[in-house]
Length: 197
Image 1 (spheres, rainbow, N blue to C red):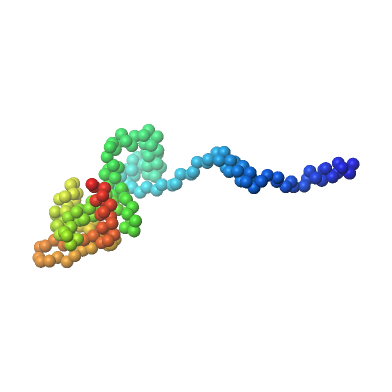
Image 2 (cartoon, rainbow, N blue to C red; image 1 turned 90 degrees about the vertical axis):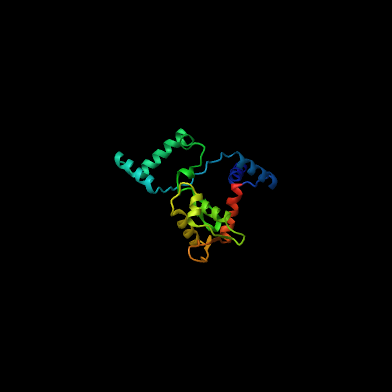
């Protein structure tokens, strides 16, 4: 009777693990490797539409009696489901179709559009030995096909405000305003020039 009571008490006591620490670590590692890997939750992606795309999306949504956001999500889901992106855009890059949307990160300079990169590349390519580009706005714009005459002045002014370019003083009446790349601008130009080779 006393032995049975002791065995019952013994059963309820916590057992000391008799395995070696190395064996415990090995078994824990094996257990981790055999666990199924849970798929990571997708990161949320926010997209903004502007100009004619936003207007067209709103018109279509109103005609269908839906919100523009729901319609945009449904259209994109259908496109991805049927893999039509390559059929619609072809071999070209999407940033040429979505003007102003194809922004690239350049460290401390922030994100730049394809057109901004083009103007930085032009200024860097046509700079004299002293680092100043003395081409007129008209001449720079002529090198960019299918662009409006205000593109280059607007980009240069925006790049000056962001510390990527610096404006020089005009020498003489009718002479173009010289522009030069700052150290940040030169770093961007080196990346763009390397890609153009």
